[in-house]
Length: 254
Image 1 (cartoon, rainbow, N blue to C red):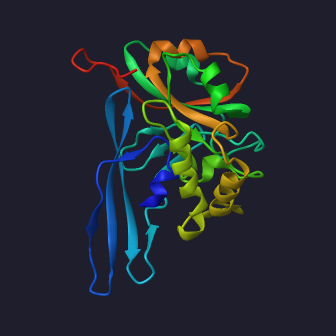
Image 2 (cartoon, rainbow, N blue to C red):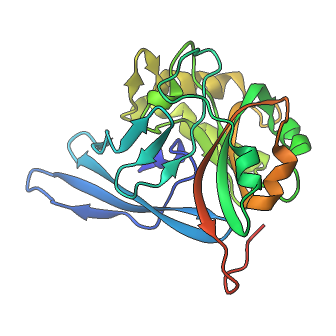
């Protein structure tokens, strides 16, 4: 599914299979998914979409796969905590803004992912300057418009998955071409926030990587290394997601 290039945060797929095929030229696309946190894989819920050969489309039908609580969000199938990103313009989001980096830094012998919301949009170069070399950026968030509550969007956020914590101009242009095709995808509308329109406007506004600005990111690393990000003024919220106990036979990747 092309949509996987747009979202969701720091979730990758291991396969795509056709299932429940119909003689009328339709069926389902099933993808097994996982998170990779410093070399440790964490199972995630499957993505299931309905496809039609008649109109060459795939529509995700596993909406509602997130359990929300005031204190956090959880993947419904695995009950793993979801790292939450926040729209600073929303005063009372469904999920209460978190400040969890300092707590992660006190954990011993873990690897963890943390969603970091910026106080204002940053370029990739600015992010690189602020991020310690011991922490890896996994996913860059494109943000939302207006007062859309990003905590109430089923974790369907728009962003760019990074390879080995980096992105170059060629890779950005590949993503940008996907953004430009957004009108052909069955993207959703959350309470007036038109995802397809937003991401197409983003591609037009930021034709080059050096111009692109991001509202937040998901980072990962050894838990102790997060101490360098604690109490940073450019971070308005920090929400931990999956965390895994380190084992001696599995080295960390960053």
